[in-house]
Image (cartoon, rainbow, N blue to C red; front, side):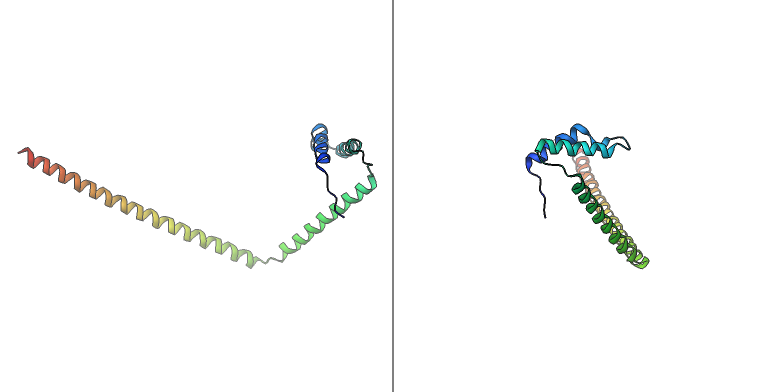
Amino acid sequence: MVFRFSTEQDCEMMRDLIRLKPFAAERGTTLDVWDNVAKSLSTALKVEFKKKKEANLAQCAKDIVAESNRRRADREAELSDSDVSDGKQKQFDDGLAFEREQAQAKLQFDMEVQANNRNVILECAKLFSAALANKD
């Protein structure tokens, strides 16, 4: 069974959440605040609030999350140290390759800048020598 809220119900729930601020409730009063949210929502929507049914749904959701966490923990435990170290080694090798490429690109750029500077200096020398030759 799939339960969906209508747009009107979503808006009403958001109004109640903004007004009652259940996430900011003091420790120990959180359950009471959420009960107030549920009651005001059921009153506004003219839907009967069934505490036992809601508690069962909440417990079911908690069980699903707990089972999911357990499965994830089992999968993580199955990963061996060699898998992790292989992944770290690959990451390290990739980092070295990237740094090598960056160093080569910087060296190439520096060489191009030096070549351009040499060309500019040669052009300036030609201009100055031509100017000095014309001065005489």
